[in-house]
Amino acid sequence: HMFDSFEGLSTPSEQDGSHWSEGDLTCGLELVKQNLQEFSATEYYPGWIPARFDDVADCRFSFVHIDVDLYEPTRDSIAFFYPRMNPGGILLCDDYAIGSCPGATRAADELLSDKPEKMMRLSGGAGFFIKGMSVADTNRLHAKLSGKPKASTRRDQAA
Image (cartoon, rainbow, N blue to C red):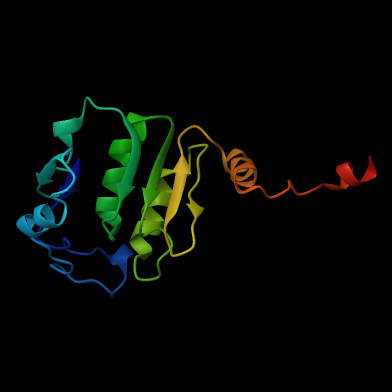
């Protein structure tokens, strides 16, 4: 499922800073379809976020990739997809820790403020969370998957 205006960015709000302007990052639907033609399971939903989300309101999601740069569409996207995510599902926000996208960071942090999950920063500026996992659980999983030894605590050293 791919949601996009295919008309560039909407009007930035005051939370977005001054880097972006309305219409920036325009890429037409036909060019996107041409570039993704090898992927047969792609559905396109042209329109503004969140107007087209009702088309998938009854779906569950295991992976959500949000790359909308601005506060309002980031907020609306996380608010819509969070309750529809499967436990263990991953939400990736491409713009989470990018200096030119302060609104995306703010929206994610605000929406997760009362949730057990928090965004984990990735190199390159993206961030993610795993549905149903606290930050501590996510850190333990990362250490296990990366093969890094668990950091010892003072209690471990005394034993």
